[in-house]
Length: 95
Image (tube, rainbow, N blue to C red; front, side):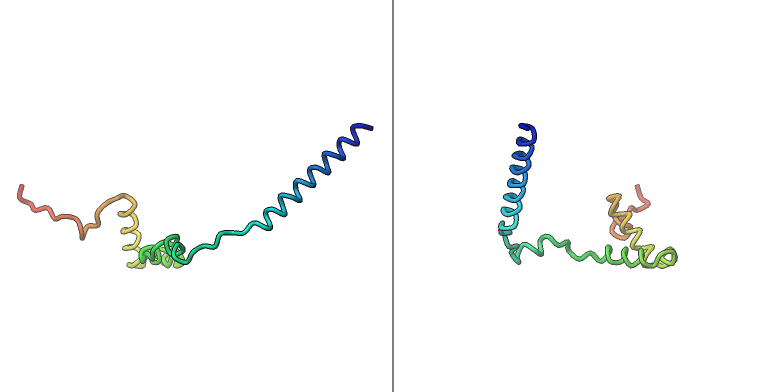
């Protein structure tokens, strides 16, 4: 008989704790996000990213699109940390 009573008391305590936690969570006020911090969370507009998205939507046709080929080359150079050929210093044949 004592086992049943202890089980009931434990169940009642568990339910009471669950209800209390729910009430606390529902009454908690969220801090409003200030308008000045919202733009800082958004990434800046990247034209390369937009071009890559467009190429992704083109599918197989993108493999013959000059803009997509250039965007992929630029993205590869960014990833590898290379300077694009047009910005690289020109080496003369004189040594």
